[in-house]
Image 1: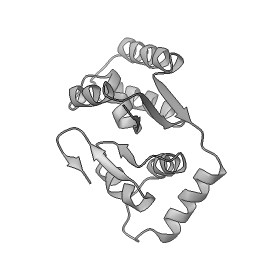
Image 2: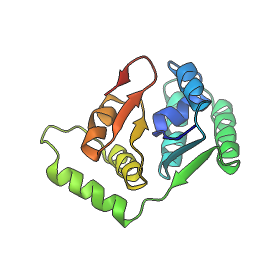
Image 3: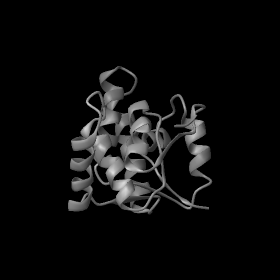
Image 4: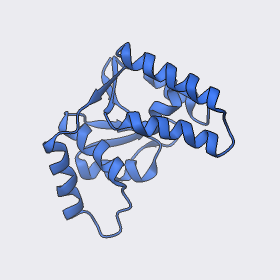
Amino acid sequence: MTNAYYDSTYLFKLQCVEHGTEAVRAHASTVRSLHSAVHARAEFVSACHRKIREGHGTHRQLKAMLDQFQLDCRAGVITFLPLNDSVFERVESFYLSAPANSPLRASDALHLACAAEHGFKEVYSNDRHFLAAAPLFGMRGINVIGKGEL
């Protein structure tokens, strides 16, 4: 068993039943531990709130998902990695050398730089921009939800 780095889209699928949940949960059951950058906590609650905004959930459901997420965090199911100066320097370096048409958002660049800084060779997500940028950070981007590897 190995460690896996999940972005917040995959962390969210561990709690919320939606397209891809089964595949992500199945993959998570095969790894020793899950890791993500610390800002994924804010992204997670934002994704919960998005479900309310889009009419696909209630505040009570949001609270239940957040409670379970916090329990998992306290139990060590997910290890959150710090965003230190080295991570920010990787982000800065990326944007200085990125192709002009690169659509990578700052939060995803933080995830990728954090994973690279902590020695991960692969990262898991179903975000196509995130996956496409992973090689620019020296990693393989993998989507276990039927799309394979980039």
